Image 1 (cartoon, rainbow over the protein chains, first blue to last red):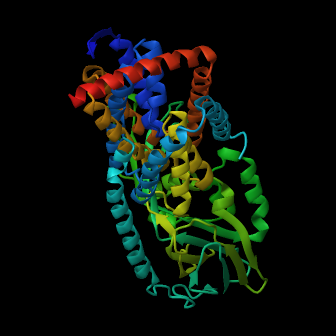
Image 2: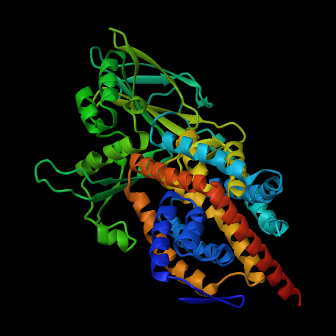
Image 3: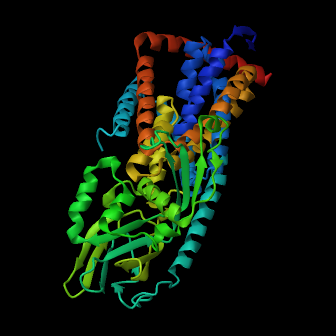
Length: 130
Length: 410
């Protein structure tokens, strides 16, 4: 597929992209996370697309997954509305405060702390502690 | 740009406020006296009383009564509020050698349920605990001499669906099978109790102290986070002899009962958790769901289907505002986004079905695997070569954004 983006013609292997996107969507809708951290590397590293094409377009792609999974969850009655309202308000406020703090902190440090945190959570899920 | 994200906050606050009001109204309803207190109804052969008609979180219920001499006395304590519990039977049948793939659902499992058993049976509970995940609730009841007929499990309706990989791909939980008879429904609801309450220690408590003259007493410490509303206390020796009384559970202000989760939480807990996790998510460049869902499982023991289903839509707002902002400066390739989106739409159709069909332990171990991959991905991004590449990409991104914003102004 040839994409025209701001006067540039960019080639993308959408077959590989779509297969990858499908599996990211299955995992993310199954476990309840967004999927961005997997979609961005998929599109930049695997498909070799430049970051400026990926930032907005990946967000659009993920929205389809979130909308479909949410409608499925509504159908299966697995959305607790009160809990959703509480966390959605917190998420909006957090989404506003987050970037203010981001300006003052080194992104490498944050990512390394996140790695430790993710591994700690993973081992908790494996039942090694907690 | 960030301020625009706050546009829908007033709307959400209104939703929140209306929930608060409805919660307060529900509380007034619950405050109306419903308990028949100390009067013992039903069979004349067993008498049972409790020390209060109303209890708070973590209170101790003192139960006393009298039963015929020599028979072991059991006491069932159950919340009238129920939750939906689902389970896939994928254990190979020993006789036929086939995997049944039957999906069981019941909406009649009490949000809180326990059977108090004689103190002398504590070693049996210990033996069940030693079996880890392999323990059987129906086997345990048989061993203890408890007939569930006439108790809460007997009142449950259970739905069965025959499922298959094709059904999952079609986004379905399977084909509805003919309804179960009463005996079959009791038999199939007991594993659902096990799915909900997990450990034998939560379902069976050896606290009933029976005296030789037939009088008995037991005290039950109510755990934190259980449903409000009416609870029934039924003392029984066998199918024919049982007597019930009831009490009301009252939650403190700020603690709400979450219907789909089947549990009560102080609302500030999930609020602060979601706030901190979203902020961290922004900082690390990944959505908060990766951290929030496992935290909800770990801290509150929320059912995994509810945690996944409730956390996912919270990212909708930030996604939509992001798309709106990028689209305004024409920074989205709709051709690329829609093509990838079609594949993701299909994936989003299947994922929630799989969540329904897998057990908590499968969910946890697979999610742990996903987190390990993500951690690896993030570590790789902090390598010097990647950092340099990323910096370069960010520069180009900035230039393009400037160009796009400039074009918008003209």
